Length: 465
Length: 59
Image 1 (cartoon, rainbow over the protein chains, first blue to last red):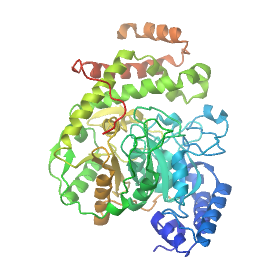
Image 2 (tube, each protein chain N blue to C red; image 1 turned 60 degrees about the vertical axis):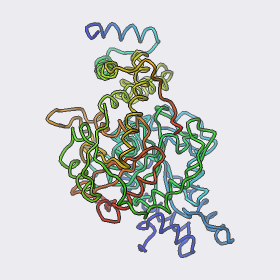
Image 3 (cartoon, rainbow over the protein chains, first blue to last red; image 1 turned 120 degrees about the horizontal axis):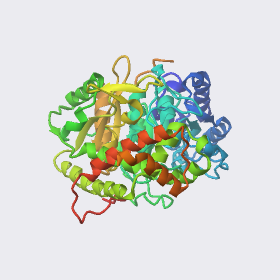
Image 4 (cartoon, rainbow over the protein chains, first blue to last red; image 1 turned 30 degrees about the vertical axis):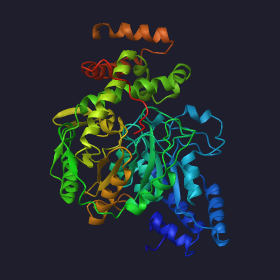
């Protein structure tokens, strides 16, 4: 076992707390100390809930001392993107405007489930305004920074989640992913991330963006920690109309199952374009380790990305229409300008995008009759510099902000489960998407675990701290 | 349509009571041009008449 609570995985902390080798309070204090030491430069946290965390940790220790069963995350510090409701905090969702909301009366369901498993919430995390972002930059709170190079982006929109876990401030964080907002910061910050199947994890009491494909999910520094968090958060919830009634399907007991018989393919065509060499290298390493040589084509992936773009900008505009009218100058200007443009898209295009989604999903699901896993890059490149406006992909100079997620958007558009795994290239890590059929998070996590055991993927120690 | 895009922007924002200050107009227009280009890509795809919108996945 590692020496100090901050160097321990969530699984190690929970085991140590359960067996009373350390207290939950000690694990919490260690996380709070590391946050105090490093968040000044990372800027991952917007709120540190120290008093609440200490009270919760003491309650965990008291329950264990009284002989009550310890949860699978006993004493594990975690933090959440600041679009999750946290009792007593206004849910800012990265905005200036939402700071005027009253304090939330109740935690998001996923926080309640994490704490019911013994975890300890230590704070809320920076994010791109209203989640309309791939960079991790924020006009109001400043950028969350990459723990491996402080001059580089953390990725977005769950930038604080990637920065906090990549920087080992906490072993687990929660984020949201509409078009790539878990997978992009996981890629840039060198963490594992899980975007579950659409409808798997409840979004109750979180601030929405694009309800048609908003997902919530965990970040972690190991696959086991990722699976531990995912398992305790599963289950139906009447407070989210999209959350499916499906029994909990634990993945931790399955992680070490053999993967040699899984049929693994590499996404071709669209997913092999617009890549810098590091992204090509990362996919090649993962494919080689898994013995994957077959390529499959996701039909009309470019059109799928276009349809995701249209649904995002129009649903986002509809969500914020009143705020755009009343407080346009309180938005980050680039976000405001995108949302106003979104309000101008004719409804017929939105309807066609929705219908195309049905067609595209059916075609992609046909692929899963002959493959179990599809590999694809998570991002076109390693983390760009903060403030970088353009990059060159396939010889064409493109704006960075909307194009970071070009390889994630066609996947979340139809709600497929994805484990993002970090390939520890030098000088910066980069992620690969392990994509499975709907409701087969277990397969994506098993493959991620096998790659981790082989040493092909790992969350590197933060190089910038 | 692009030739009339500024007129379209004025008409839509006026009809919807959305603000559009002159200083924002170039950036909003640039975003709208990108979105319309992508919308046309979707529009160009021939879909069966009986295809229904996807909503929540249950299987």
